[in-house]
Length: 151
Length: 151
DNA sequence: CGCTTGCTTCGAGTTCACTCCAGGGTTCTA
DNA sequence: TAGAACCCTGGAGTGAACTCGAAGCAAGCG
Image (cartoon, rainbow over all chains, first blue to last red; front, side, top):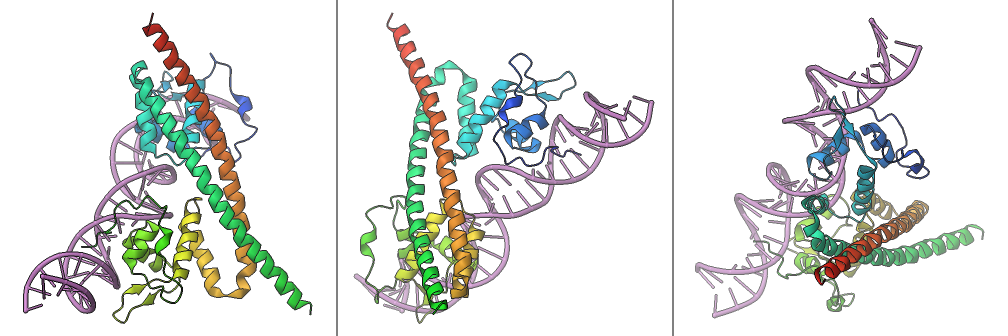
């Protein structure tokens, strides 16, 4: 039936407790879903498009995620909310798979991403300023109306 | 043929000069496109979905944008890069069209958006921290390799 | 006058990032 | 050992936000 048992995937806090110690780190797909806030569908899709390394399987073919996989998903989550397109993350994943000789390229990619993030923060701060000006305007208007009403 | 004459729409800086004074503020769609970095297609689409107020027309039916319209597009642009869905901006545009009695609702919407933006900035700063840790790691690896190479 | 360029409409097409379905096998709990 | 809950695959579907195309006016220019 494929329901993601746990409701309320939005609350990402206070969760990181139930990570099992390395060695016994075998999570089912729905555990990982609860953990990351992604759906099982999305996790499988990430794998299909090459955004995940090869995931371990149980003897019957079910996925068993490790702590490493969780770490990777964490990074992916962070990169995702910088607005990085999934295709770029796939590229990064490929570099990781290709081995040590891609260090330089990965490094460059990370630095470029860092610049992007800084730029985005600056943009958002600009937006915040505009928003604050508008909010002040409305607060003033509201006060003026209240005054008028009490006359 | 509908090409957006001016190349390099990304550089949004140093542009705000050619805004004509209020009264003679009549811009063609392609001028606005150059101005905002949006395409003419997108500008027409914004109008279709109700994201723009009614735009003036020339005697032959061509759009003539005003400074007010430019200001509105500026706000839309800012809101867009906070990740606000277009549907929400349409809602805001509707409130503006409906008149003064929607001040309260607009005010609330702006304040909610402000909170969103603050949250997003915080997220991005978290991401920045992760990125910086990774970048340090790669920089170290690079130095280690260089050392090894020079032995 | 013809040419080029730009504008018009409406509807269809594209891209991205999921999201869901059908039809089956597996695992846990009472 | 039954039944509920979970997991598998491949492929199709969805919603958001554009993006493009076709066919046809309109304006400026050599």
